[in-house]
Length: 294
Image (cartoon, rainbow, N blue to C red; front, side, top):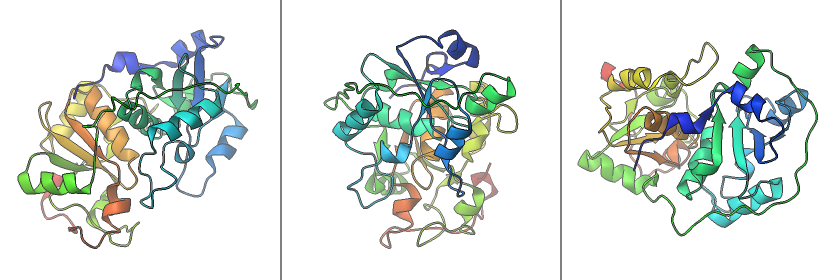
C-alpha cells in the first residue's frame, strides 16, 4: 500500500477552467444528500459547465448485495461508466459541495479495481467554484456511449476489508480502527441502524477534520491532517481501518490520510450499515476515554 500524490490527484478551479474545451475531460457533479434534498435537483439548478450528474449509488453500489453500499463488481461499474459516456481515453474530474465527500466513493471504487489514475478531484469543488464566482450552467450535456474497462485481474486487495478482518484487527491490535462518523453516531446517541454505538476499541476522528470545512472546503495540508490524526494515535506508519455508516465518509478519510502520508489505510466498506444490523458483531456505547475523540 502506498500514499497518494495529492498534486496529481487534486486539481484547482483554474486548472479546470483552462481545460474547459478539452474533449478528453469528463466532469461529474457528484452532489448527494442524506437530508432529503435531491442532488440531481441541485444539479439542475446550476452546475459547472460541461458537467453531467453522477449518482454514486447507481454506479458504485452492488445492486444484488443485501448489505447496503457494498462495492459493485468491476464489470457492473465499467458498464455504468461506459453508459454515461466515459471511456478509457477520458480523464474524470469529480466534484461535490462537501469537499470531495462523494467523489471519494468513486475514488475508492476505481482504486479498488486498478483505475484510480483516471480520476481527478476538484479541490474545494462546488463550494470553491461558487465562492470564486465562476461560470454556472443549467445545460445538461450528453456524451456518446463509450468503453470503460477495469482491470479486474489486478484489483487492490488491501484497500477494502470485511467485518471478519475488522474483528481480527481488534483481537490482534494489528490496526487502529477509526470511526469517522459524527460523535453522536459513535457514542450511540444517534442511531441509524438496528443498533447504535461503535466497533469496540474504535477511536473517533471526524472525517471533516481533513478539510477547510468552514471555508472553501479544500483539503487541509498534509501537516495539518497528520497533526489532527496524531491526537488519536495515528502516524505515518500506523495501520488504519476506517469506517462510517455506508463506506463514503470512510473512503474520504482514507483518501485524506493517504494524501497526508499514512500509507497503510484500508476501508471497511460495509461499515455501520452492516455492523449495526448484525447481532453477531460486538458493539460499544459512549466514550469513557477522552482520547478516542478528536
